[in-house]
Every structure is written in C-alpha cells, then in structure tokens.
View 1 (cartoon, rainbow, N blue to C red):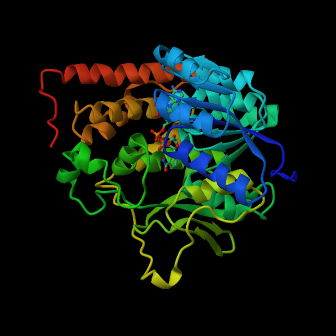
View 2 (cartoon, rainbow, N blue to C red):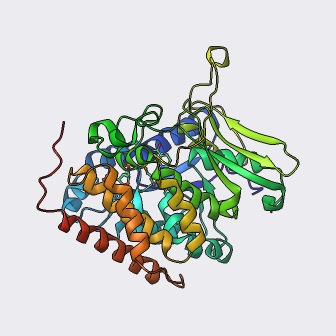
Amino acid sequence: MTTDRRTNRRLIVLGSTGSIGTNTLNVVDHLNRTASASIKVVGLAAGRNIKALIDQARWFNVENVAIADADQQQQVSDALPDCTVFAGPDAAEKLVHEVEATDCAAAIVGAAGLRPTLAAIRHGLTISLSNKETLVAAGELVRPMLSEYGATLIPVDSEHSAIFQCLNGHGSSPRNRVKRIVLTASGGPFRTADKQTIQNATVDQALRHPTWSMGPKITIDSATMMNKALEIIEAHWLFDLPGEKIDLLIHPESVVHSFVEFTDNSTLAQLGPPDMRTPIQYALTYPDRAGGCSDAMDWSKLRGLSFEPVDFERFESPKLGYRVIEAGGTAGAVLNAANETGVKAFLERRIPFGRIVELTGEALSEIPVERVDSLETVLDADRRARQYVRSRLADLSPTPPVPAR
Ligand code: NDP
C-alpha cells in the first residue's frame, strides 16, 4: 500500500468494548494526538456492555453504534440522542454496510465476528484483523474475496504481525523464499503442569495467563493451547503456507513474537514487549511507523530468552490445527465452533478443562468435511459442530457441575 494512511481515515471498531477494541481506541487516540494522524472513529460495535460503548461513543464523538443485545437499544438511544443505533444479532454487520468507512478493526470475539468481517471485506476496507476465527472458519471464502473487493487484511495477532513484519520487503509472494515460519507460544498457565493437573484445571487457574492480559475466550484458548491450532490455520490463510512450513516453539518470556526462516537459512524475528498495543498500532500505521504507544523494552534488564519444543503429549490441541489444514473445506468451521462451545461450557463450569480439546477433536472426527462454496456451507458446519458438542454435554448432564474453587 502506497497511500499515506495518516489522512482522512474513517475507522469502524468492531468489538470496541473488549480487550483489543479498548486498546485499539487508546492507540487511535495516541496516534491522533502525537503522530498527526487523522483517524475518525465513525462506528463502534459491541455485544452487551453498553456502559463502555456509550463512554467510547462520547469520547470519540461517534455517530453510529451497534449493540448485539437488542433489549438495550433504547437505553443506548436515550444516552446517545444524536447517534444512529443499530441493534440485534446482525447489528455489527448492518453498521458496516451502512456507514462509510476506509478502515475496520475486526475485534469481535469468536464466530460472531464472521459476518461483520466479511461485510468489511465486501466494502473493500483495510482491516486490522484480530478476529482470527473468521480465517479459521472461512479462510477459503476470505482469500478470493480480498482480491475481488480490493480489501486488505493486516494481522493484529502478535505472532502473525511478527511474521507480516519479517516478510516486508520480500516481494509480493514470499512463499517461495520461506523455508518455514515458527509461531512462538508462551505455553500458558499449564506449561509445566502434568497431564492430570491440566485435565482437571479450574476456571480460575485457566484464566491466569502468565504474560498476556486478554479477553476470557482467548485466555482459555491459550491455556488449552487451542489458540495455537487457531493460529496455525490463521497463518496458513494469511501467508499461503502449507502446514509443513508452520512450526511452533514454546517461548515463556513472550518477547520474540515469531520467526521466519528463509530458504538461505537466514532467520528474521520480531521482538517487543508482550503488549497488544504494539501490533495494533503497526496494523493502523502500516506501512509507516509512528512513536510507540506502549513502553519500549529495557533490553539491559532482560536476563535471557528461552525456547523449548511443544509437548504434544500434554497439549494435543495444536495437532488439530494441522489436521484442519490437511482436511480443508468445512473442517475449520467445525473446529472453531466446537472449541467455542466447549470453552463456553467450561467457563460455565459444566465440563472439566480437558474435555474442551477432547470434544473438539471428536467433533472433527464425527462431522463430515464438505467443500466450502458459500457462507451458508460454513454456517451450516458451524451449526452442526455446536449441536454436536451440546448433545455431548447433554450426555454428561447427570454429572453434577464442576464446582468453582
Ligand atoms: P473480549 O472478550 O475482550 O472482547 C470481545 C468483544 O467482542 C467485546 O467488545 C464484545 O462486546 C464483542 N462482541 C461479542 N459478541 C458480539 C456480537 N455478537 N456483536 C458485536 N460485538 C460482540 O475479546 P478480545 O478482545 O480478547 O479478543 C477479540 C478477538 O481478538 C478474538 O478473536 C481474539 O482471539 C483476538 N485476539 C485477542 C488478543 C488479546 O490480546 N486480547 C490477542 C490476539 C488476538 P461486549 O463486551 O460488549 O459484550
């Protein structure tokens, strides 16, 4: 992209009240104040948190907001009388269709982000993509749509932002020059735990991430390491790489965000503090850079960087990512939906921690893979996976809920 992205930008933030959404608005404010950027926030979309949504709309003088929880529409309209308020399950998608924009931060969690992100692609927007679930479930649809509608995806996920930055300057099709990429993983709260402890981990333990502060769903995905399965698939679609060229490495300090190893055995890595504002800012300023919103690393205080292989015996979930790439078609939608349903059930203390990954693997085995030829095929696979996991939960119903500790 050669245009100066500092001027006349009109940004929609989807999932504005979440961890990434809030950080995105902080970065926008920082860029507008310090980097002579003019990014106008023209739309905000949230799920249920109307207090944060209203505060954000007032802060940025936003004229259009969307709230998925239709019951709260009146309260939002009363608080923001000059604002157009979209409400209901498809409110975010409507907002994207109705509001003129140049950019979109796609930061809704889970499959709920799929339709609004596809709408942003249809409008040819430049999208800073956090909602990895869109690529996991519908990468096969997304890739051709990007060229058809002239939309651009810039990854926000720290690992993919790292790869994206390392590949800059390596031509439009770096695939042939890349020997492999290595996605780093902190290992989450159970990096050193034995299998039995992991199987029976409590909600509180699983929500205690050692290095990153994130929303609950991705925090659980990090604890099961299903997040790496999602990221392997995300990398496959973003960088057009086969599974054999995507590796994982545990790196507990979360400072090296990922590596690219080129065919000449030279390796590039991107390093920085574990602070999502850095990749968010890069996505918003790309291909330029601006003064950082997050703190710089104090390298003199860093006592070392350590790496270890993933123990696939204790953490089986990343293998599901490779399995999905191999299977293609609707397998990604099944994995994503089954995992989401499992995570929800765990957070509701209805299943043990270890069942999340087991149920996702079972759904992948039980639900036949179909070719993805439309959004409907993806949504149908998503529905079937959710139904499958729910039916397995019903089988478990005589068991008392897992107690909170
Ligand atoms: P959070 O749970 O913190 O936030 C989720 C956001 O999505 C909230 O604003 C929520 O609204 C909104 N939302 C949920 N359902 C809907 C809906 N139906 N319509 C509109 N908005 C909705 O999640 P995170 O910010 O942690 O994660 C967001 C995405 O970014 C995920 O895909 C995650 O995997 C990815 N990601 C996150 C990272 C992080 O550091 N947090 C790092 C890398 C990727 P409300 O709160 O009002 O209900």
